[in-house]
Image (tube, rainbow, N blue to C red; front, side, top):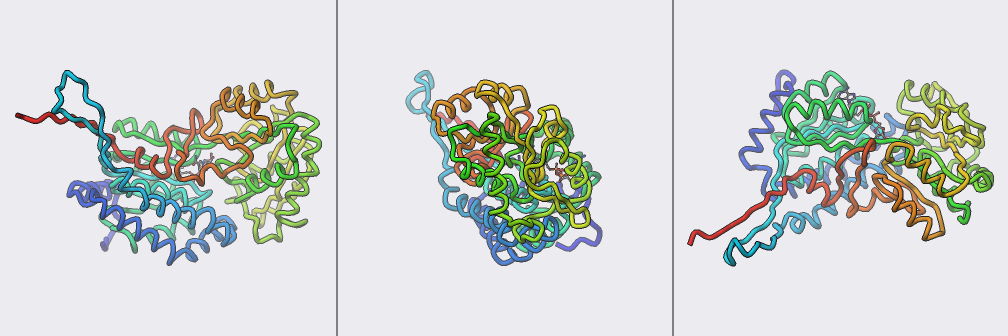
Length: 440
Ligand code: NAD
């Protein structure tokens, strides 16, 4: 469609709602066709998206593909493989008082017009993976990329309308004023990924229309390291998980929690792991990313003196570079422990034993992810039973969110609701209860 003047949010929502009302988005054929087109976009224009991700975050092409483009393709393929199955109505046993000829089932109804608001740290994946779920569930979608990743936002605004059904999918670019204007409209679901402060703004706006929300938020995800572990392996996995995307990952290990002896032994192991990944000068490594903007750069530099430097610490504002950094002897009350770090700074906090580690976790907001490195089944079981977190990873950070059959989402301060795979269908559909009794 050609529009002489930019469409206003109310017009966009009305146009998409009109499409939804025609029933066009409901047949499974339309849904799978849209997913196929999105897949084609990602395959044909993957290099454009990778270039945009490099411009916004210094992501290498390999990382852009692995964590954003190919990630979304896998989500599409998994959905295409199973969608018919997931959508199948599920019968329910009928109580005797309704008679033997009555039947009951649940069926998934699309919700209508869905708003997806994405953040800047994985600006393609975190917009497109929810879009996959919302389309698969048969909805029309308004997609709002993050203004803090402007190259990716522009690429998405250019590419989505070139591939997808523009009567059912619209991209609205912009920052706070544009999002505020969108949030004044009535949606049938709002899917927000970002920080908890804005999450509250979104939920308040949604309340006006009784619109359900999914909030994919962040927080401080701890990594507990037990004394019985191979610290070379632990350090390698911690460093990979922490320093991917220069630490700007919602499920990155935020801090390490361990006993003093293990903390001391972990120091050389982490130093070695960083060097093995990025060499002695990570600034020169093509595999290492940059901080998204000066505001976050300055915030992160302010956290660097919260402890003793084990490795890293150097930084260069002109190119928004902060070295992969590990801090030891960190006071739990220091600035680095008072907010989600969301950057390449890994503090190591010591606790005397497992009980105190569990208390430390439970004294704070429920994290989006919790990582446990322990050879003891009992320790793993205790932490699983005695703590609450969005996800739990044994021995490997980040990876749980790549399992399409697991729900991805937070709990408490780290969010509400979940998605990926069939859980996206749950999120973006209404499960309608149906009872049927023959008239004769
Ligand atoms: P951001 O600044 O890009 O904001 C996210 C979105 O909210 C953007 O689209 C932005 O335009 C919009 N927004 C900002 N202010 C607004 C306002 N006042 N009213 C309405 N909309 C507004 O990203 P961010 O919040 O800095 O993202 C980082 C946070 O997101 C971290 O806390 C991180 O842990 C979390 N996160 C969570 C997940 C997850 O899947 N759970 C994934 C990535 C990031």
